[in-house]
Picture (tube, helix red, strand yellow):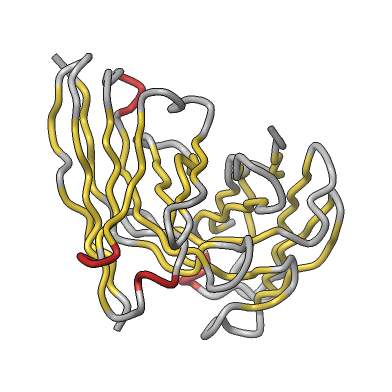
Amino acid sequence: EVQLVESGGGLAQPGGSLRLSCAASGFTFRSYSMHWVRQAPGKGLEWVSYISSDSSTIFYGDSVKGRFTISRDNAKNSLYLQIYSLRDEDTAVYYCARETYGSSSDIDFWGQGILVTVSS
Amino acid sequence: EIVMTQSPATLSVSPGDRATLSCRASQSVSNNLAWYQQKPGQAPRLLISGASTRATGIPARFSGSGSGTEFTLTISSLQSEDFTFYYCQQYNNWPRTFGQGTKVEVK
């Protein structure tokens, strides 16, 4: 069974940092590209970042570029999102998501999400 | 950035009726368009990829069509579990972008 389990969320202060993790199981993690997608309370989905299976290709959304860093450890079946200089508008549920196997595709599986709340 | 615009924001439909949701891209995305369903408090679920291919396990009442800039998700006969939120997403260009969503509610 495919599982993506996020952790590392919680309450953080504006200007602070946070590291989200995503533990993958039930599939060959090293073969799949991965994404982070977030959803602010009561709002729609916002794509955040992408990393290819071998970490050679990385992309970020404009609103997070320069403040977020995506990475992965294929030996540990884990995906990460390091968030710096937190802002109120970073408050959201963050989803770890798997891209459908193959080239440049949709997202076929999502974790349950982890809430990040930025507040003083 | 490609802007994805969904309409309507809210669609009021009676159970058993047909629902038609629209998604428009600000420039061509070919057929690199996906539809997701999201129920409150849950993660999104892939419904349609490649604009018209149902994902594994998705009932036949869900269908997608379109290419280029105009896309449609049709739910042929709404069941109680279908009253929720739907999002389109283009994966033709970076950054990936989602539409703002359509809420399908009971009329």
